[in-house]
Image 1 (cartoon, rainbow, N blue to C red):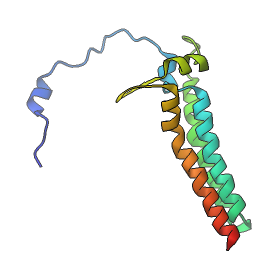
Image 2: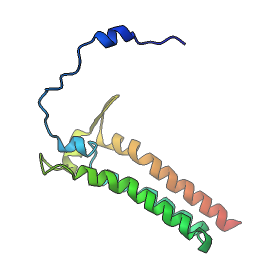
Image 3: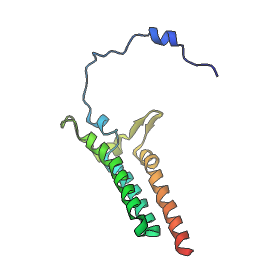
Image 4: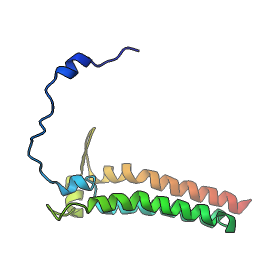
Length: 140
């Protein structure tokens, strides 16, 4: 397979303007989604973990489930802490503004409902999968 990039042209291109004025943007720091969506994703993954504990939890699995919970919490708490690093610059995320404006992503503009559908589909499917496995476990 041939390379699609012309490396000489890339090297000769002008460098990015490193002296451009930096405009702090709070919403850029919090990944442009409303914090409630992050909380919903976090809750969905923890709900799955709870379903699995209810179906399979016992004394031998306590330590692995605690490890799962710690890593899961860390993977959501760390970005939440990162979002709070900057001083209080700019407006905080507003739910009504998110519902009104939607979300701009790489492939174009999405409405708030489409954004929530795309972001929350994984936790929703994971919860349904967990419930299905728990039902199978309970019936066996």
